[in-house]
Image (cartoon, rainbow, N blue to C red; front, top):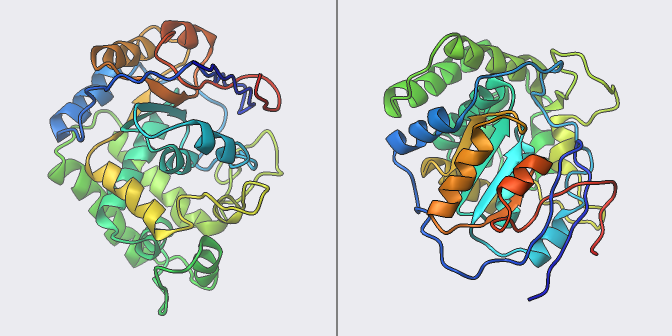
Length: 312
């Protein structure tokens, strides 16, 4: 069987490729609220510090690798990612059965739960963008619009305090009353803090919004949604209605699991590795470090490392 190795730089993260397993896995088609919340809590580690907020990705070329990854991967298995919204695009393209998204900041897990609630309460992209940034939905939006047309339609819309308050209440209700997730400490206040950053920043918010940044030349949310892979194709999760609906369905089935973890930590990577082993599953693509790579040896399809990317 042919073996592949992709070498890609994404914030110093390691990815690699092994021969893909053909054995059927026993990963569930969806998780109950109880099982989802159990994994969030039992797989996670204590939160740690990071010098930047990272409300939005700073990876301007995050789509460049997608044509090749789409070509050499097949649907199924698990996905392992870091940070926030760029994962939705990767998940839509690669189509895993389950996705685990890690970050050392507990606030990132809270942000992903905010996204989860928004996906679940918003039936389409136009409603999602409206509620995410607390801008009233303009008339005339259609499902056929691409991301550029959709986001430009919101350029003239100002943030709306009433819509913000209504949506924040709906997010809390979805997570606490509907799903019955039990938050601790200042988790609920962090939901408000993160959502308020999107209210203030709007569609043009970027990595430096409400935060210092190691680089001021960072893409805005708008830029991340309208750019392409360098070959003319835009893979962003908000560029097409079908992509949005795919992620929404996974969220409704509790198949995108946010975790608090340090890649060099003692618990999370081992817990995920054991879970995949117990279910005969392969990590199709993941953002992990060398220690995590060794822990998952034999159950990984792609891990990235290095500078540039190539097949060897």
